[in-house]
Length: 197
Ligand SMILES: [Zn+2]
Image (cartoon, rainbow, N blue to C red):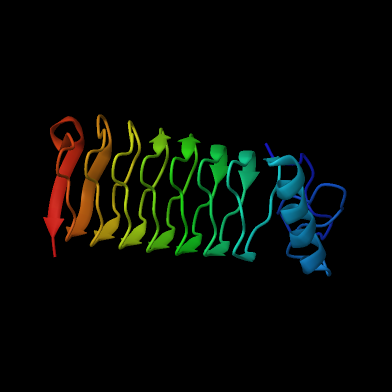
């Protein structure tokens, strides 16, 4: 998982960047790291074993990218496009996503727990066995998505759409929901308990 090397700073337990002895946080030229990551995505559309924690991305084009075994915890993504990407065992926990597009994303075993989503589009996606525990979700569109076995428990979901979704074995336990439509979906096959606020 990620690079099998930790940052050489004695008090740091974060994974080192590829081709570096340091993690992203302790790297002086952070812009160079981000530029190289964007170039990698532009050229190969693939990223594997990348760990960039607590970085900010704006207008990042991740369309059709294949992101595997990578860690972007605590990152901020603004106006980034993940549409038609494949996210396999990718970690985005405690991240912030504003105005991002995830249309037709294929996500398996990926983690978004503790993250905040504002005005994001997940429509037409396959996001199975993915973790959305404890997310804050405002004005997001999950319509026409397969969310089989994904976990939204303990989340706050406001003014969002889960219309025409497959919710089989999806976990919505102890979720705070307001202004959310499940029209044409199958909430009866989910672990579903609404708490209105
Ligand atoms: Zn470090």
